[in-house]
Image 1 (tube, rainbow over the protein chains, first blue to last red):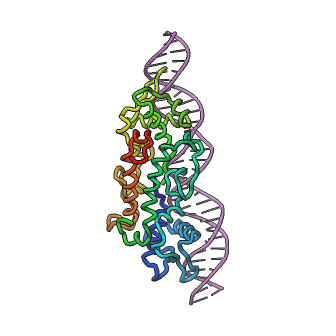
Image 2: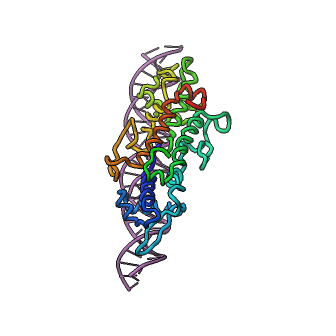
Image 3: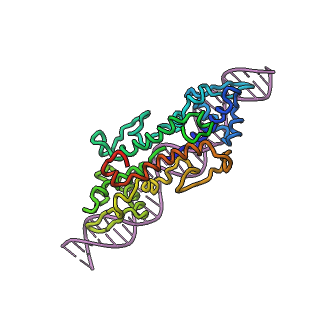
Length: 144
Length: 144
DNA sequence: ACTTTTGTTGATAAACTCACTTTACTTTAT
DNA sequence: ATAAAGTAAAGTGAGTTTATCAACAAAAGT
């Protein structure tokens, strides 16, 4: 049940971009310095976020990164799915990346107890993370 | 945000023990066969559960494993913590195994946004898993 | 006593993932 | 041209996951 460093750094990076959204761009090393993220690892993460369409960048001397969408249009759930994969604790309860369990004795039959509980866990996690936007995140609001 | 095979197998094994609780004991290979768990891996898991005081075992010809506590006294949260460690997505929001983040720019200062959200996620997960007992699990009830 | 059936323990290991690092570009502004 | 920036892919070392194997220890039945 763990969040990877990759996702954590990704969220922190997007937080910084949210704080300057509409005002200026931020360069890799600015983000890295402000959030204590290893520079080269951060590059990788920003690149993934770029491919996913969350940020855009400009090369060259006065380049840097900017958010491509409005902060209230990006949820933490989206970000974590991009960087870490599905939120669900187990493939057979994922809604965005369902995978049937190959060797489960309950597979395709009556409903599996594990599937049942983990389904509610998934819904709880997604319920929070998919309703919590970058805007909420930056504001530090306790609930989405 | 993933559940390990170890925990999944552990839950499935305890499920079988719950189903026969008070009636009979179950041997390793019975559990393994019923839930499609690799036998030697299962041994390891049962041993961990034994050390944690959830099950006991008897050797010899009519030996096997039994639950040591009542099924409604064991929660899925306990089991997963034993086999997988803390439920919290990140060390600094764990209640059973807190660890302060070493290199977070918000460490010890004002409350960290990441910590804030992940705290609510932890509470949601623990809220489900710590109120869902093996008895509920075996009954297949949709809510704990 | 002896043998069989079982559980216990520790060592080993393949496969994979995580968290970076390195290297080699390409683009842009001046 | 050149220096500052981002792009891209591959490499790496440590650790975790998911097992497997073999030797050992205890209990039951004969």
